[in-house]
Image (tube, rainbow, N blue to C red; front, side, top):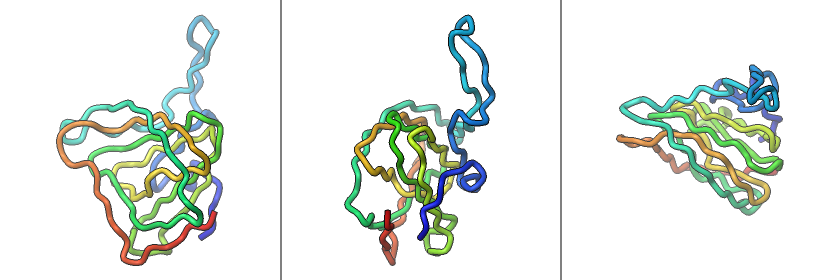
Length: 157
């Protein structure tokens, strides 16, 4: 599977790319700062959910990366934004049972992603130890569905 650069257009079926490029810029704080506005749609209110803000610390996996499972969140979107300027990987698919629907992206350390509600994705894939700012859903209901693959495969980095 080819790893392609992360772009807004390529990732659109799975959610939003969170980056400053192309954002609506608003001057704030007496023009001493700029706010890059409306970067992603936070979809967490389904079935009484609310916004959860957290940090995640991710460790690199052995290479090649064994892809054994995929997950999705049926009740809310999920944003990961890196806190270090280090590249990282994003693996998504339309149907986890069909290998041809998988897409792998290389994100820059200045790009985050917002997985749309119900978008199949692999948990965080980093090339170096890395921390992320996370915006997702908290509240009632089950917001995690994991699918263990019948035919695991390796992702070559």
